[in-house]
Length: 145
Image 1: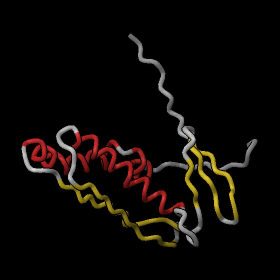
Image 2 (image 1 turned 90 degrees about the vertical axis):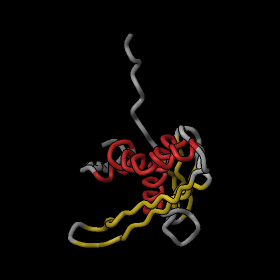
Image 3 (image 1 turned 180 degrees about the vertical axis):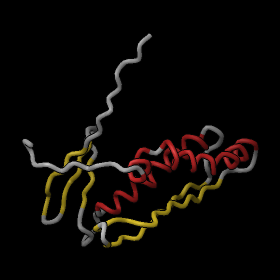
Image 4 (image 1 turned 120 degrees about the vertical axis):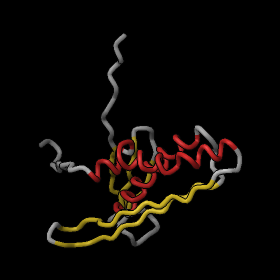
């Protein structure tokens, strides 16, 4: 039996909705406003941090959730924005999981795999953090080029 080809393309469309404000729309119709930080909209850097933490959190939830639903599941992400000889970029990206599970066999099993789930996400599974960690060229061109 041959596996059917998988759709590997991921895309988001951005449309200007105001001065220094954009609307991101995904293929499923989800909409997210993006701003420069002068309003409640997420900035591009905040979205990157949320994407890193969100990707890892979903991975960890899948792995631990097979054993037990968490009682609490919070993730904090932070980084330093710097400007140096390499231009503007983030350093010291840190994702901290604050997760608790109920007592009992399922909770014990989830606690037992929590650290390895975090490490598996970081080292192999999470597309977002892996893309940031690996050298990944970004091509920027005008329409029609």
